[in-house]
Figure 1: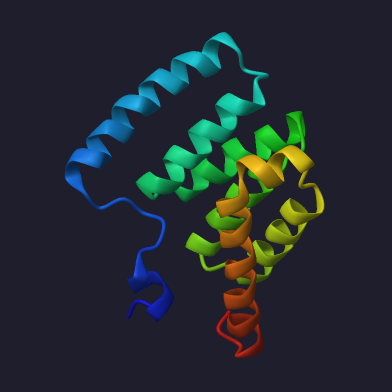
Figure 2: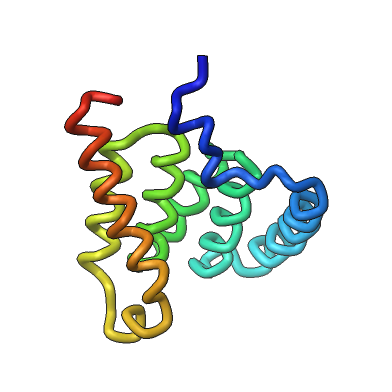
Length: 134
């Protein structure tokens, strides 16, 4: 039986047309990664797409590579989302806290909505972890 959290399907795209667009975009990003394998932004884009496609292992590998190349707010935030999707709640909490720890002034302006989402996810995680849902 699926957990209540998984039933929410917060991360995975279910719309057929959107999924098709993501699959096409994935091919483009894979070509970009072949040309510039050390570009952390490409790994972040790839990880975000894999997350939305429900390919969590590929997303985790890509975002880990991006973070090895360059620590970033966005990298840790996406890693937290990957862990949330996999119901690895304690790992998600750690990643979200790292994201907030490396937020730059520019991030506060350009990613304000994303920062709010992370804080919201942290409050959900505290409840899930406290209630022993992991």
